[in-house]
Amino acid sequence: MPEKKTLERAQKDAREGKSPSTQAGEFVREEMDHIREGKHGARSTEQAIAIGLSKARRAGVKLPPPKGGRSSKETKEKAQQDMEAGRTGRKPSATRSRATRTALKRESSQAASKKSIARHSRQAARARRTG
Image (cartoon, rainbow, N blue to C red; front, side, top):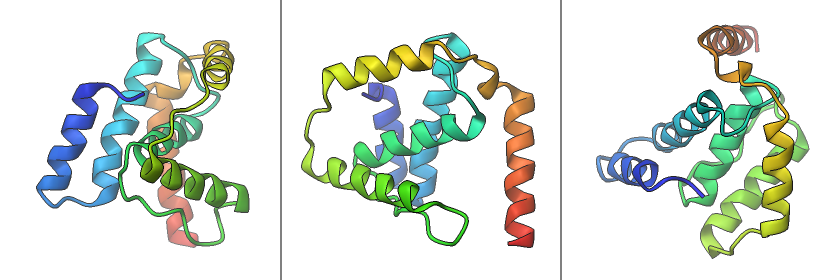
């Protein structure tokens, strides 16, 4: 569940008419903070971003599933599933949430380092240029 402050910042962005990706950025920021604080880790920066986007969709941000050839079918289906969960407001399984958190605790916090984020953004920009 996202923190209250994160939800408030995302709602403020929505009221100001900012794009869904800007609203979702608040959730990604929260996720990076959690990793830096040591609440849990992530295998890669991309995974950390994906967790934040998933939280945003489940919180009701109207962020569409990724389009284009670079995203896998599974990723698009998961995004669709998250959007549906955001609309219905169904509570996630406590057992599954605990298992996910336990698995993430075993990962390192390197994914949220300045160096990793910078590397990821350069790779993403490069992929957009050649794609």
